[in-house]
Length: 126
Image 1: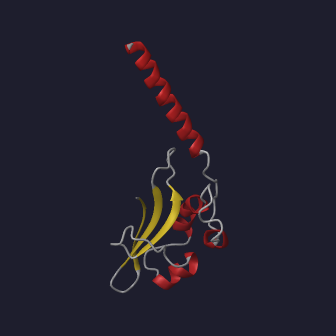
Image 2: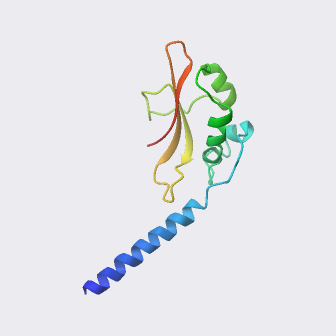
């Protein structure tokens, strides 16, 4: 009986690992940020999530500390209307996190200083 339970646990683990790697293949490989795709309301919630694929290029090439809120919104639009991360100034939903299982959502979070300029940029999961 213990042998059957052990086999079941191994098969269950292997199945979960396989499913996780298959789900991970849903990530689009995008090497650059595209403002039109980022803002396309019809595609934001489609999988694979384009915003997840673009966020690294966005953060490296387009967002920086010291930018004004207006400059950020000119690039990526208004923040997502959400109660998540209410202690941050600007929050953008990106899609399912990049891990194989994608249980949580990935968010781009920006904080502003007293002058209204970006002083922190982070990726967080809920």
